[in-house]
Length: 190
Image (tube, rainbow, N blue to C red):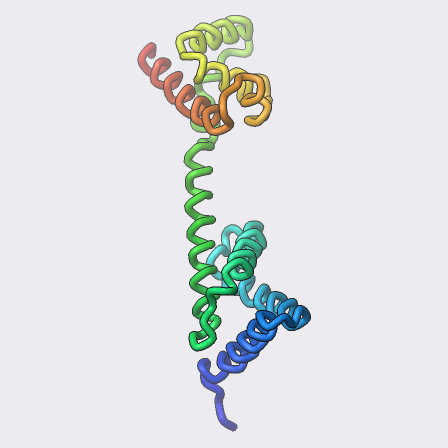
């Protein structure tokens, strides 16, 4: 029994996808739909391996990649390997996703790191509220208002942005920088 090499196994897939894409480019809508269907399954497998901790986000990256392939289909050269072209686009979209995710995480620092700011004796809740109010008064509005609305009143970032006139990014940054400033002030008092 002859073993099929990985290259031989991939070759029919490459040929089939290329045939479907080229037929789609020539106006065959059913072939193009089949191309996108088959390609989406391959992209899911490719991205699941790379986003194994973020499985909920795989479909978003698949859709972004399919959209990029669709929008760039006129740039595909028939004399070049199709899968290499597609996977280059997928890697680019994956990089975009991971870069955006890291920026988002950098702006959304967990409040758990700053819980000591808001802890106090159960016997003196009014004093604790007064102390937090005094500390918050030391902050500029662009830091104080986001903390008050998002962290103390429980409003969303979007609601706070609309209420304060700040952008959503400015609200997130204000919360982050404000909590850091409060932590530094508390450490300075202790």
